[in-house]
Length: 71
Image (cartoon, rainbow, N blue to C red; front, side, top):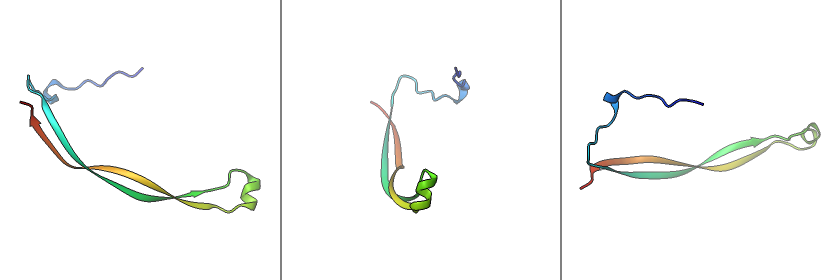
């Protein structure tokens, strides 16, 4: 069982009694990824060719982050 990593008390965020609200704006992009599928067995490898498959890959990226105190 792994132990939690101890953090230095001076590096912790000291927020006191006020809460912080974090608002993020994200941009989601979908890019194609090419994957080459090979036959699994020797018999398939001798009779079937390799096939290229295009898979869509979705990535989320944070564009803007704002931090403000709650009233």
